[in-house]
Length: 456
Image (cartoon, rainbow, N blue to C red; front, side, top):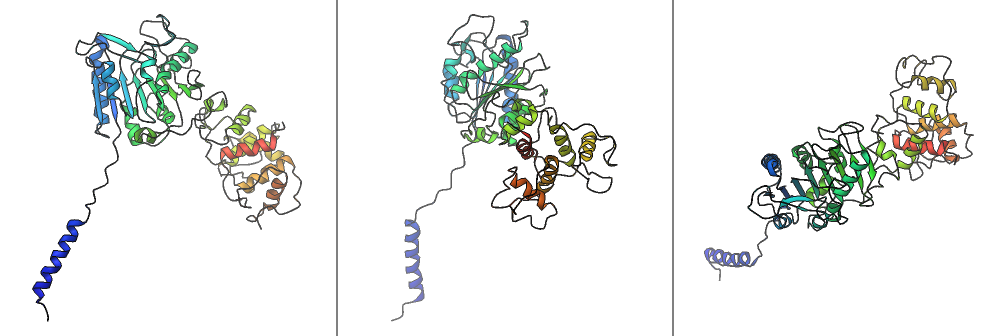
């Protein structure tokens, strides 16, 4: 017997409805947590009002990027209020008194009142009831992994003195920076940045809108003076301190102490940073050129710097990943070989330009014939094959007895490549290849020069 169509439709509707009712409801994925920022204004007597204004400027910038912002301002910025507020914080900003060491005041070997926050002793009692909570206190802060501390307008934190006091020597300024960071670093932060004159707005904007290391964040601020020097922390072994005085000898108002390889993304996401690179002392050249923190060739770069083979691409940068130009190659070789000045001008396209003397020297030594008659092409990058030819001629390497690589067959520079390999100057680029047409970077060139010219 055929059932009416309407009955069947009704029956199927009941079954489908029961199935839908029984099916689990899939909730939306929760959004990722927003970075937490805490802004603190300590009890700073007559300066407190202006510090609250600076703090509000910081708030106006932060709120553009995350809603998770907490203010803890005097007269209610007590230790308990601050400690509770910063739990899980990615960024902590502090304005207030700084009480560091060395200073004119009584030495406390436990730094109980030194190198931390100047807060309200009690809540609601004005901006002058200051109590200092030093290293033993701030070392207990429960922050997010990879957190960043920003200290602004403090005395001592960046190495500076109090207004009206004698400016510190470099040695004293370094101790102050190292000491002021120690307690926060014990709490597990990635870095402590102190800026005695400038507020945090530009730092915060860069933290939320750029990708890079915290050391580069510190270097790219509008008030970077270019007088950077650094040292390995003695209070926190393995960490690095960087300072950027107003002049080469005074004005210690900018500092960084912590892990220079930690990144802005680490801070925002609460990620434990990678292990810090070797601090200054292991490789002094990292303090001369500020772009070598991640280079695997830093030992080779150190050697060619010590041998006066390189002066960097600027006074503060080595440019490790930039391609070596033919002009730079000429200077590297002329310095490494201590070549004498040439007796004539060999090329027309380098007249009066950088590297001309070195280009003429290597031409007279028979290391180069140029790129065309009377032309050297000083700005062109050096390929790995060309580098092989330069070094084989410079070192008078004998011909090879076998073919070492599969990807240079038929190359006009194959003999030089094989000779270099047989002399132990290269192992190729991997998997039996030499990559002859690939440009040589400046950091790779350092390694080739070490193999070629280091004798001990």
